[in-house]
Amino acid sequence: MLSVVIPIRNGTAFIQHTTEAVLWFLDSLGTTYESELIFVSDGCSDQPERALENWLGVDSRVRLEHLGKHCGKGAAVRKGVLAARGDRIAFLDVDLSARPEMLIRLLSALDRGADFACGSRHHEEARITVGQGLVRASLGRLFRVFVRAVTHLELLDTQCGCKAFIRQPMLPIFEQMKEQGFAFDIELLLEARHRNLVIEEIPIDWADESSSSVRAVRDGIQMLSALIRLAIRDRTRRPGGTTESVEKL
Image (cartoon, rainbow, N blue to C red):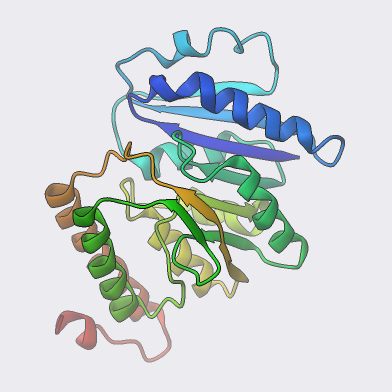
């Protein structure tokens, strides 16, 4: 079974199109997978249940989970993953900057033996049809450099909102996940590496929809703080680990 999780934070303007597009994709899989689509409201105030009223209770594949208050993207994804029934679970952004068809590439990677398949906008074979604005793109480049420097993760794009994984090895990671904000992807990747899971980075097509709820200054500071915290914890868990090189940054 394939479960697709979509976190939403006051994104009801996207819901009708997104629901139709994802259900069309799931229908296109035919009998390959049973499927479900799980939206998770991250303390939304714009009544996503009303935007989904044409599907909830009508199409058994569509579900809506709620966080009691705004906690962050990581918390919303975690809620959806823990509620999912599929043996394969994916998550996408509500604006579908990565179209649901991109999941075919990620599912193929899982078929080849990956435990965790991560879409990448920065792979040399990725195709960006609509790029980010200059400020966000520049901040993103700086953040990627910093991520690689302090974590030594080999991925070119840790933050892409298009990922899929095998439930059994990844579920314990989500159960223990601490990061509630945008740094949750890094926590997942570091923990997957610590457990020697197979991580594969997959080039995808991407069109930026400029709907990100990332606020450059405040969220940037929070992400850097979380990154350093995660890197220190990861470093101390390695054999002979030390925090010295991280603390110098």
